[in-house]
Amino acid sequence: MNVLKQLKQFYWKDRYLLFISIVCLMCSTALGLVYPHLLRFLIDDVIKKEQFEWVPYLALLVVAVVAVKATFAYMHGFTGGRLGNRVAFSLRNALYEKLQYLSFQYYDRAKTGDLMSRLTADLEGIRQFIGFGFAQLLNVFLMFIFGSIMMFTMNWKLTLVTFITMPFLVVTAMRLERQIHPEFRSIRQANSNLTTAVQENINGVRTVKAFAREPFEIEKFASRNGEFRESNINLSYTWSRFFPTLELLSSVCVAVLLTVGGMFVIKGSMTLGELVAFFSFIWYIIAPMRDIGFHINNYTQSKASGERVLEILNQYVHVKDKDGAITPEHVQGTVRFENVTFSYPEKQPALREFNLEAPAGSVIGLLGGTGSGKSTVIQLMLRAYNIKEGRITLDGKDIRDIKLEALRQQIALVFQETFLFSSTIRNNISYGRKDVTDEEIVRAAKLAKAHDFIMELPLGYDTVVGERGMGLSGGQKQRIAIARALIKDPKILILDDATSAVDMETEHEIQAGFQELMKGRTTFIIAHRISSLKHADEILVLDSGRIIQRGTHEELLSQPGHYYETYKIQYSDHPDFAQQQEERRVVG
Ligand SMILES: Nc1ncnc2c1ncn2[C@@H]1O[C@H](COP(=O)(O)OP(=O)(O)OP(=O)(O)O)[C@@H](O)[C@H]1O
Image 1 (cartoon, rainbow, N blue to C red):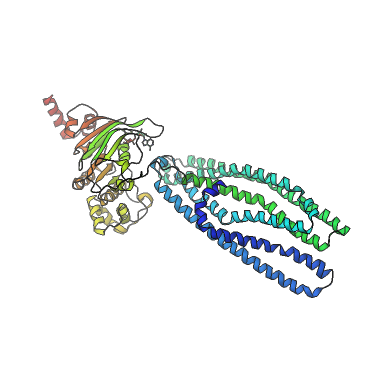
Image 2: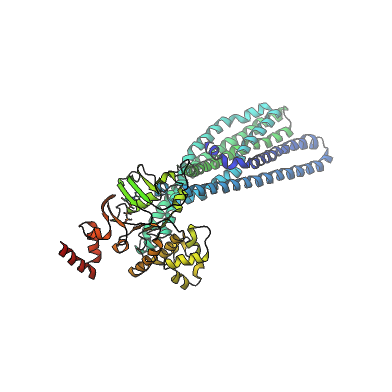
């Protein structure tokens, strides 16, 4: 019930639907109690006393009761369905909203397939329970209570005898609930693992094929599928053990009733009509007894699903606006890192005592081996993670005091790996801004050297690119990403190995465009190619999270070290290199 309590905000606003649904179900159930009375009347007062003129009226009354009962049942179904769908709707939206604001730290560990299964299968479980399961579970108790009251008023001795198996039934039901809850949890988990396997396989289908690992993938899936099957078999096994017990206990009630009730009729302490009515009432007890397992099943399943959904909703958001966070006006774009040391959770520091001063409009280059911390500098500037040591400022203000949205609005990024949405090229380019004109889109595309190839596509800017930009080359995707960054007109531009997928000539062309674009913006360029960095105002060379060299291209070339070594490797067959070597020799 704790899960239901925590989900209250999603169904409580539509509580009137819940109440109507419950009341309708109660009325429908209560109307069912009329039948046994009609039967008793038919046998004792009509058939035995040969008052056959009552039969047509009784038949009409039965039809009327059935019609009203069916109307209530319909209303229950209608309002329950509505409630379930409304709850699922707002829960789905809330989950999606939460996913938008969860921090990078969460996504570092999250699995897409698992999240998808929580948003679909688990949500469906909750929808079913809140829409129908809850009212039906309540109905089970109502039927039991109504039926018992009727039976007690008719013949309390027979009722007590009939209820002999009741304590065993309660114990069995409680044991069943305890046992199947963890089993449902593992089914949900196994289902997640299965979805994750499918999702990863489809995402990485090119890698799978390139490495001819289809058999491995098939085996991996089969093993997860096996786990899923095992969890379901365990559940069926539990069911198969409990269900006959529940069935047996309820059948014992019927046997006891018929034996003892029959004796009462023979002795004359009960009429035949009363026994028949009693026999009908007993189904009010037996049906809930038999169905209790099914309802517990439903409840437990949705409880397990609810826990998984709540796990996302209750997830702590590491990076968020603090109280009184500001939206700075007239941002210049001066960025400072002051003694920043940062580690990803459970890892060695990715940056150590990092200091950087990037005046507004300057170009900063970051060079370093793989894993040296270059991307981390960018992530921290975006406030993807909170830092515990040192501080980062934008125009002198600690970025933790600035609203996240306002901070990120000032920054545009072009990543090493380009993500494109499965939408038109126009929508992909204009993604970062709300109101963009076609002229602006074309201008940005031209600057990013994307316009020509876009125009060669059959639908030009209206061409829909496939999932993650399938159908475009790596360089074309990157140029669209560059156009998308440009259209944002950011104060800070970050190019994280942005031109790695284009050839040298295109890189040169794009960079010529950048020269224009970088004016008035602070630009950070992460690159492995010296050619991308050499015009930077300051180049930082990183190694294991530390700055090991800093200076301009010329300054760094004039000293031995990582930069010069990299230069040597990249330019060894370049005519300039021989000349420079000569100059160095002369100067030396
Ligand atoms: N999300 C993350 N979670 C945990 N550790 C991370 C994460 N991102 C990076 N790291 C670790 O932090 C260190 C610095 O990584 P970073 O991505 O900043 O390097 P990089 O210089 O950009 O490398 P590359 O040139 O290969 O992209 C590495 O040891 C890396 O394993």
